[in-house]
Length: 388
Ligand SMILES: [Zn+2]
Image (cartoon, rainbow, N blue to C red; front, side, top):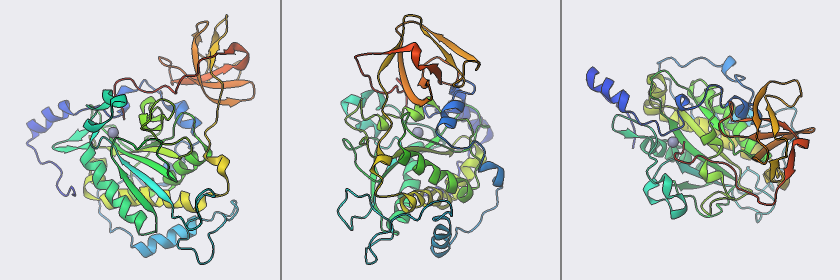
């Protein structure tokens, strides 16, 4: 289905509707100020890097590039001079996209496209709390409608390049194993001003997941003309339930590179103009990023698929000081109590980067000597009541 017609409602109805818009998605408004800044930075997306070079979307419509033009563009961008040429498939192989070494030779790459909130009422018992999570909406268009419309277009673009695509509902197959997993979502807000797109990896991101995110980061803004919602990544995105293989059976496998895409805000007119009326631009932005990743990855680098592992720790008898940066003179975010559980998401020198609820920025740094290893290992934190 397509969305050629934005809802045409009388002004009063539209105003009332705006107030009623569901904000179950990871709306910027529900995030503490600056909450995701650290998370976004730690995920190694240079904030604003793309934004600076990209025009803000104006309402003109441009014809989508032809498939030929796209293939040429991809070929040009797929081999940066500072990156070694990825091992290519055998000359007579069926696809120019290399596959990971564990796969039998000739296996085409497999990509899971998850339609956010689609059939969320069918989620299994372990995710029953998310069955009513229907996401954002605009007029009579639900987020699942929009996500589905874009996902099938991405599917067509990928299949045209020889990629096998699984179109997945909210319920992910147990330990879903693929070369890439991309959850497709759109945002909603209580106001009409918040706009733009954002991408996130799991808390503990493999190098492959980060590369997948960087692939789409390099194509999505240019394809859509939409601005990046810099600093808008939320805890709900990084703690997305489908990433959480340690807690849920219905999640991606540990070695499946996964990211979540928030395409734009359904509650913003300029974002809507692109997502509803020019969906092929949105689909191309996602598909080209995935293809870029598949072509640039090193299929022999199995270690790239492994998320970093960290010990399970608690704060020591004196608690810990959580700082904004891995330095003793960095600003204090919070003083942690003794014996508080800490979830580590990164390490630099003698410092751990940790996630902590109820803390500005949701993450910060503590000295390694302020924690002790604990016996129990818990799964990553994730939202308790809603999902993006
Ligand atoms: Zn959503």
